[in-house]
View 1 (cartoon, protein in one colour):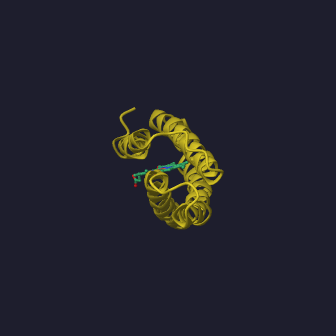
View 2 (cartoon, protein in one colour; view 1 turned 135 degrees about the vertical axis):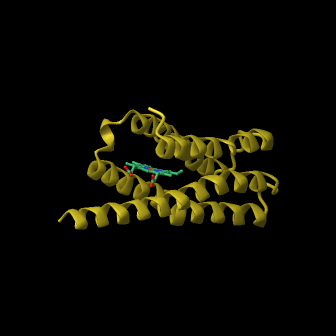
View 3 (spheres, protein in one colour; view 1 turned 90 degrees about the horizontal axis):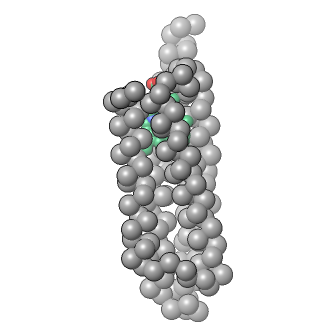
Length: 147
Ligand code: HEM
């Protein structure tokens, strides 16, 4: 029984890492797409192609990965008892903020599809730093477990 539980935790961990990578990849790519999208003329065929690429990235990679990484991560936390550790509370806080950032990106993609371009290219490039910083903090909290 113990061996089965250990094996289950390892599979959950593997799945969690795989979908965390997919989610992060999507979070890195979408704002980059926005920068290139905004360089296209508003009513051009290039603009329409970026709208399509962004919708595909959201629907095929970004949103399914967000849902799966949360489900597998919470299942992992439940089986390992992580809810009682300080590092995990810190990680949860960053993950909630990162999920909010994800929501913001999705709403910005919808705005772009409607022809609204409220952020400059420079602002979007700056926003692109968010997932990198969040990933570094998440990995440090989960691996070093400083508290
Ligand atoms: C989205 C919700 C997530 C939840 C609920 C979650 C939950 C967890 C839990 C409970 C553990 C500890 C497993 C153990 O006790 O051994 C863990 C480990 C870890 N997580 Fe997450 N996680 C999530 C997302 C992420 C993301 C997005 C990343 C990467 C950016 C990440 C990177 C890691 C790493 C590197 C470990 C350490 C694995 C090890 O020590 O073997 N997690 N996660």
